[in-house]
Amino acid sequence: MSIYDEVLAFIDFPRPEAFDALALAVFRYQFDHVPAYRQFCVARGRSPGNVTQISQIPAASTVAFKYAEVRGPAEAVSHAALTFTTSGTTKGFTKRGRHLVPRAEIYRASAIAHLRRMLFPDGRRLPMLALHPTADRMPESSLSTMLTWCIEEFAAGATLCAATRSSVDTAAAINFLDAVSTRREPVCILGTTAASAALFTALAGRRRRTIKLVPGSRLMDTGGAKGQTIPLTPAEVVAHAHESLGIEPALVINEYGMTEMCSQLYDATPFNFPTWPMDSAVPPLDFGLDSNPGSRNLPAGFRVKLPPPWLRPSVIDPVTLAPLESGRVGLLAFFDLANVGSISALMTEDFGIVQDGAVAILGRAAAGGARGCALSIDEFARRESAPQAGREW
Image (cartoon, rainbow, N blue to C red; front, top):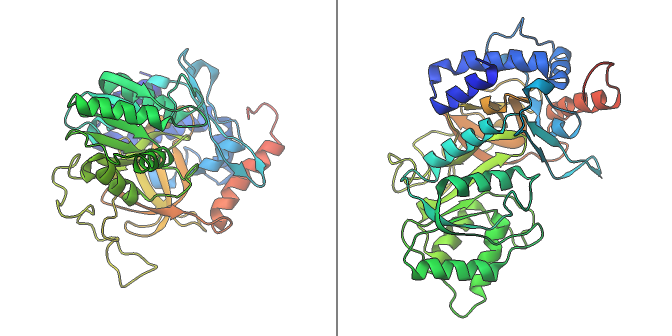
């Protein structure tokens, strides 16, 4: 059985006790077969010979995908391989990262399995409205691909993609929602925060300012500040969805994901986590914030996110890059088994807290503030400008 088949088998039937051994096997594979990552690990004095636990595996910054060709051996690339591009500006010029996913079925299995747990725990198949382009309209977008898979797996009845690369057709979206509401069908809405904001604004500007969707309707908010005229926080999306569309707050689920990672995290609510406290979005965890020692819990209404069993979150010191203990604030890092074809140990640009498997996302690191993170990125940048002979970048 190949390492890809082992990861796929774990996603299909997770065994938490087998995670560490499989993660170390994935690290050995990536060290041997992903040249950019091997060079990074060697520069940090790490190799399969001296790495015996996950905390010792070097985490590469997600920004590294903008500097290096992150890919494994050609023979691992299946006919269904996908390549996704990131967006953003780095060091004053536009440089889009690329993430090659050699075995798309692993990415799909990861996305679908956790969607089923977090957005469709009731097993319902629903009409679907996409407020973000689907894969046929934006094939280089990992989000577009994930939404397309979601529609293929969980949709029933009418579906509509009301978005192009440049705009959201809010009139078409409202007509679609009016129609499913008239038919007394619950609906699932999929889109970015900016797209949802456009829909809320369009609803506010018409004579009938609300649509009363059928109970069981839900909204997946994929986040993202780009394109928002008036930025909405996740809590504000929950409030607007309830006021404008009648969607119960527990069924407005915020997703956290990125192009460089094949797995996603979702809000934990009473809908997808029945033992959750019904009077609070915050689990009974003691998140002590170093920046405010007098506050022993996250703010009221703050939600934490849950990863799938094949994604292990952690936090690291932004300067030393050393792992931090549970409950401390640091840069979020993940080991994603579903990233077996590229780099599984990833360091993000987001600050957060990890405790008892739950993740509190506190915000993006300030530019220039994370010196250790910047150093890690520079290592990839130097390798891009002076690659070694025989290495693939």
